[in-house]
Image (cartoon, rainbow over all chains, first blue to last red; front, side):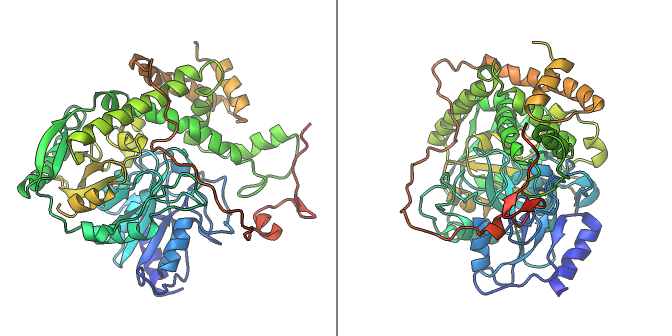
Length: 438
Length: 94
């Protein structure tokens, strides 16, 4: 075992941030030389067990690298391991792990959640005492949410900006890979490496990748900042609102021009619209886990349907819940009222953001309505209360907009607070520019 | 529409999920709560609105018709436990 692996294992022993650790991660030459990179479990790494935090994919070792992995290997990254997550990304607190797997603990306070679903990624980003960048993934807020709870930067690019080839699908029209790091320089560096068109992913965008590092030092004088005023009211922890308001003040002090923005449809219907679409897509994606080609495989017995059902009994409660609800909303007789309706509301939400971005360059709100909750508090939540935690983050994810969570200080209990910044499609540079001023 | 045991059984059958009695009971109450929230989307006027199945407009891409390396049979079967003569063994269909 090399020194880096020893460091990672020591941290992991205390915090359960990894599902798999490489015993001898080695760095090559390139822009990521001597930088350790952790990879969310749902991103395929050749010959390294990759199970998306689930029990059904136990033992699955991909025979290929995801495109993002190919790209970081070319730049010399040392891949240290696969980070813990809610199984398949189904959760906001990383407590919905696969049966028999460990729940990651927040390095700031071990009695609290790292957030989810990229909980392990945020945890190791905070806990690493060596140069490190995480590759995480977001469907409805799974990068910025945990980044906010752990006090690190989480960056989610425009849908299609980064290839999804080799990413295990949760919801294809929503999934994005993005980095987490302690500094904006590291975020910009990683985005320059992983962004760009990939002919293996037909939804990746054929657009030039700008010099993100250059954008970091651009002044924000005259930049138009829209404050999502309704995100500071009811249901939002007052200390969270205050810290984010301080962050906004910092932007104004540096010459940003502030105005209030309202997104009535997104604010009222975003969570319902998001979960409906995400569950519908997830339930189709999970149908591929039949236990014949990879992962957990039962002894071949009975008819195909019986075998299929037996293998799938290992799904955890949240996976079963999403399969049932996602299947229901797509069934004949219910499809138009639920699934198709949600895809139309999604259009209205995208339009609402597009109109807002005619008036402002960036939108601001808290990332999460509260600080990292205790595990004992999470246990008391009903599924719908659990889903409501994502109220600030589902909007930009539904609309495929780039967004970032930046730490803006701690509350009185010393727990980190994150500020969410959203920009228009392909305007990642604006987020680099603003993010570096906080 | 009544969300009861028989409806959940029907959905579970379609989704090929085996549910225990406890699963069934919990899912019924979850489904009621979640669908009640989903139903609120009815309030949004979408009469003249098209569906969005993607958040960003996509361009069609064609690739050049060039032969490329693909996975070998050995690689493709590397994670399969039950296999014979280069095939995946499966349960009987009927």
